[in-house]
Length: 228
Picture: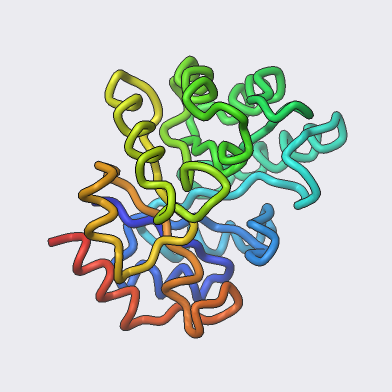
């Protein structure tokens, strides 16, 4: 089982690695769903940790719809991230009608080159996730989709996540389950859905809030339970 942990600072990243995370999603503005961190933070984190670091590509939190100015910003961010030690990027363009924006996606993937790519929880805003999955499977650069199975937390969307996992077995991006997962329910969730990657943020932080520090004992216990 692969454990991905959100980091918003260098301290977060160091603690995540120390306590057993397998991969980091590096973001800023955690209370806004995650935005692109500064190039300085990306550099420092990727120089200090050994586990893979995937960086959020999202210039603002207003919408997942990308205009020309947003696209230019995202392309520039990807170009600069390629000069760091980042393993991958996390992105999710949508059309105004809530479908995958393939025109923007193709341009971002072209810029990404060999970087690992995760399609993020913009996926949870599409009207038909199985149809959207079939769109994304046409792009081999996309390794995984971060999803809670819809607008509700992942623990409330087990049947849908299981359907997406079954679809992924036919070839396509892996399913990375996230949003609303808790250490207490994770083992049964994994058994019921069949996922092999999970994503944690607030529930392994002090006070279970996005602005809290990572709770070392909680994260260490979670990692131990997943890596048995």
